[in-house]
Length: 201
Image (tube, rainbow, N blue to C red; front, side, top):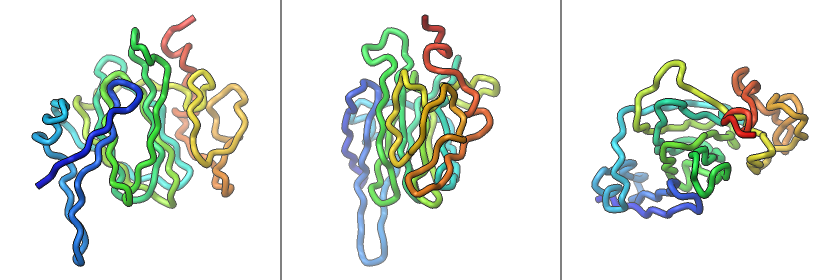
């Protein structure tokens, strides 16, 4: 009953997934994941954990990665709207240091599969957003790394975000176009840049 459309992104290892939504006068039904459908597109990863978060408008989470136990992530939004970003941090990759972003919402129903080896983050563009994701490895305490979300070396074009880069990932100089302040965790305001984090000269 499922069936999905999978689009390969310009960066290898990233995929946009569009499930089939069955609508009628009662509402809708959708298979959010079907292993057989994914395998037909060559996506045979095994998920071991499901996570969910809720965030308010202006919250930016990222850019996060796992150092020793990298996870593949299948992400989707069940309420609200976010701009989701993946940054290639795979050594030797032809697209090392490049990013790709996609807007996901409860209306468009898109999913984003991010293979292991990417840093990940998202910005909430609606009043609230509920974000769900399946991962291919368990959470390992102490294994999380991060990169400054606004590092100009990467140059993510976060939509609706206004501000001036002053050499740090601090939130104080940024807000959304309507004046909503950018909200970051303390940790996300202290990550180093791309080159420093990955030990590049």
